[in-house]
Amino acid sequence: QKEVEQNSGPLSVPEGAIASLNCTYSDRGSQSFFWYRQYSGKSPELIMFIYSNGDKEDGRFTAQLNKASQYVSLLIRDSQPSDSATYLCAVNGYSNTGKLIFGQGTTLQVKP
Amino acid sequence: NAGVMQNPRHLVRRRGQEARLRCSPMKGHSHVYWYRQLPEEGLKFMVYLQKENIIDESGMPKERFSAEFPKEGPSILRIQQVVRGDSAAYFCASSPGSENQPQHFGDGTRLSIL
Image (cartoon, rainbow over all chains, first blue to last red; front, side, top):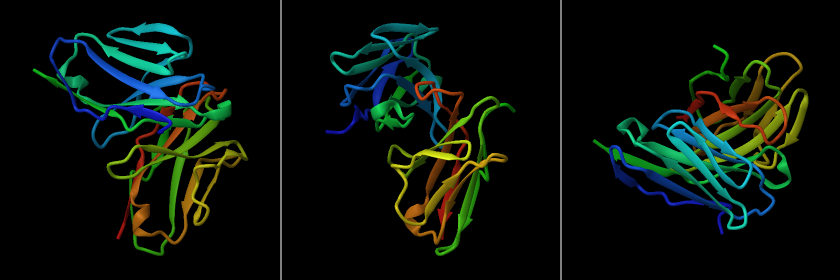
């Protein structure tokens, strides 16, 4: 079992819709969860981070965490073509060394 | 520019040469992380450093790769006797303090081996 799993996609949504990106992780000791956006040929850009169970909202983005189910998600409301990118889920690794374990990423396509 | 600074942006080496990649963390950040992204693959952790200390090098290949973060100056990722398989994007990230805090990435160094 991979440590952090994401559906590679592509996930295609129409402009203005809600995009839902999902991620599961295997290490129950993980405490920090991050979403990064990566455009082709560019570096990862931090979008959201969440530490506690529940929802965390920032503008059009909402991160959701359920530690019991080892599940974290990212919702993007009012999706725009500029949101088209690969979204990387990252989890703080074992023993909180700071090491981030990344999923393979989900490619999101927002169609005008 | 107060972001994470990496140089060079692109580096071309012939097989057997050495590659040196540099990273200056964001102002106020004391924790540096190196990741590698191979073509069509995900980001993989390599090493975590604080000033003058290697905290976690569990992702570093056992041979040819080394990293340092001296008291003065940038962090250096050094690859000796490069091989074609070392071709990748190498990203540096930094965070301000505790291991749980978000990491911010530099623009990366694209390493190509001829």
